[in-house]
Length: 222
Image 1 (cartoon, one colour):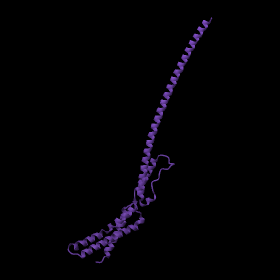
Image 2 (image 1 turned 180 degrees about the vertical axis):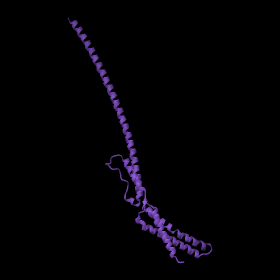
Image 3 (image 1 turned 90 degrees about the vertical axis):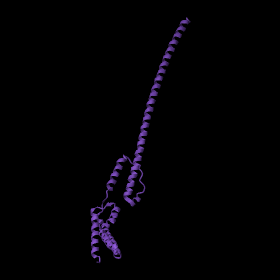
Image 4 (image 1 turned 30 degrees about the vertical axis):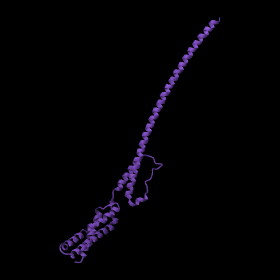
């Protein structure tokens, strides 16, 4: 009576072992599948992170290049401004640093500053309020030339030979060039005012110098 029971128990154990083996194999396969999926997901995450790091490095390099370019352009524009202002530029001090709350693209702002400097770089003509100084330049140049001419004639009068003939002629030529001598100080005045010596200032200087020269020649003792 005990043998069939033992046989049935053995068969049941065999079936149970087979079931357990199948279940272990399924779980092992599931574990392998899960592990492969996790590895693939990790590889994708690593690849995406690597791509993001490369993009961030490229953006950082581009940002550094932009900062260097903007700093160089700002320093150049600041130097141009100091050159334009001349001695008064000492009050400006060093170039200002970047504003902490600044936003937006600085390149258009730099272009705007460049265009503004280019427009202000074009010097204008001396204003009419400086005509008295221009007249003084013309008068002073004529007087200086006249004095040099008188000195040359005096040298010729006190000498003999060719000097007695050539020096009076040279003195007359120098005197007649008097109106042009006044253009030199007028040009210095224009440079100090960052202006151009246009036709009107030149006419004022030449007219004053010519009138002065004519008056000096007319009033000169014979």
